[in-house]
Length: 117
Image (tube, rainbow, N blue to C red):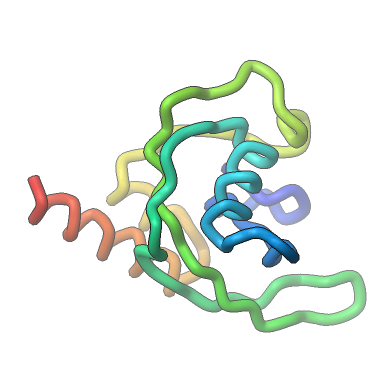
């Protein structure tokens, strides 16, 4: 999906939510931002850092990545008119994202999945 402001290709992510496990917050963000529901991994499958553009500064953020096995894509969701959505093969997604660490995390996931098959 694309970010709302810069229209770069990204993965769903958000801030930690008080009283919620990180994996549950990640699943909620995936639903709100990309309209997808499914089973989420118990533990992070990767991490990366990036500079988030705020209104008056940039903030360095560390993102924990969880794999969501998509079971349903909703017809209607909170941010559907603010983002572009598209499905990509992992190798293509790794090439399309701007954050180098995210690209590396996606490539590492592809390798782990190939080894598990």
